[in-house]
Image 1 (tube, each protein chain N blue to C red):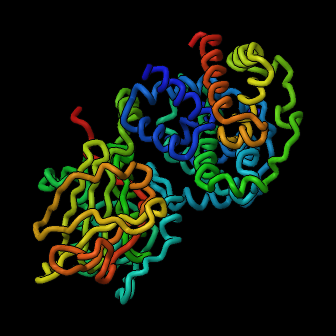
Image 2 (image 1 turned 120 degrees about the vertical axis):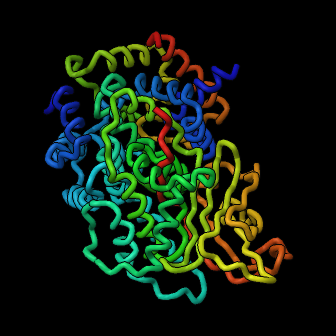
Image 3 (image 1 turned 60 degrees about the horizontal axis):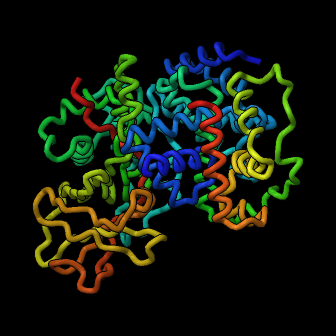
Length: 181
Length: 327
């Protein structure tokens, strides 16, 4: 398991065109990204496509990675998620209906990590999430992990869309204030 | 309050709950508003760590093989994304009676010859007409006002690592790939920017200009369409297109969101035609639409729909760098 420092070093090497560093970076991060993508896209062939696009983008834009803004994995996951959500939104969310989306509530929120595995940022985020009431917490986590839109959240939880919108706004505002910017 | 709205938009963008249209708006805003881009980054910082709890799943080994191949094709660094090219080539043009596509390589090599850059295709023939058109394509990198400085643009363009414009390549597969190669030339001339200039570029607009090159093949009339989405102007440049008496070329935007093709106006006989971009097309529609030029009676289509032969068609797929900011 590579440390943050090692990952940052690899990204810097990739920025210089180091193919072997790129391969090491891929090896260290591929399962995380694929897991994120498969959850959102539901279909392996789509997830594989976005993997390709994302890593190409990593290769092309490694010189723009700013380590002060976050970790390499967070940077890469953000790129992958953005692309995946663009895809599911454009597909009109119809094909996603028949993906493996019928997850029970328990499966939707991932298994808890041992506290010592968590970074400070994550601990703070989880503590702030914990301050939300459970229904709102669930909506925020569902949204992040499955990449569902407000409409999908509304349909699957049987809650009016406007309520979802209001709850999301308020929850995100509370998270922001709790984390102290 | 607008600031709170922007914060909410950024937060939901990062979380992923926005609709397709709202995502388009957010992405456009990221491109043109550095303040908003910063708010989005803040939200990514806040929420980004949630990925830690996602279960890791091993992808199939073939994924790496494909990535490795793609990366090799992009060498030398800096590279540009190849997936958009793949997307473009899935849409073969429907233009009637197209001339047989010339080998990509002849145009590719003519574009490559001014620069000592290793080329993927070892073809060496350079037909003169292809060289002429390649010169026309290279000078597209500058907006019309700066056309005289094309040599400077090639040198300076290499310094900009960010794509400032979208290139809409129309025409045959060969033409599409030729433009891909042309674009990679600009990117391939690399002068490592200083750290401070990297940060500046990180907030430069990514989407304020769209460029379309409309051609049937390496030796054919061509139309270069530049759309400045910030100033909302459209400029069409004719390259080697003969002026047809009694006929006019008309530019069309074709999008599944709009139904019928929409006219973007008649192309004038001058080298450059500039007009305002119609307000009712958002950036996402412009980026994802197909573009086409048809040959109409003088003054344009009498019916509001293409009546003459549609000569070129294609989609957005790549970017060309803008001239860099003065240092």
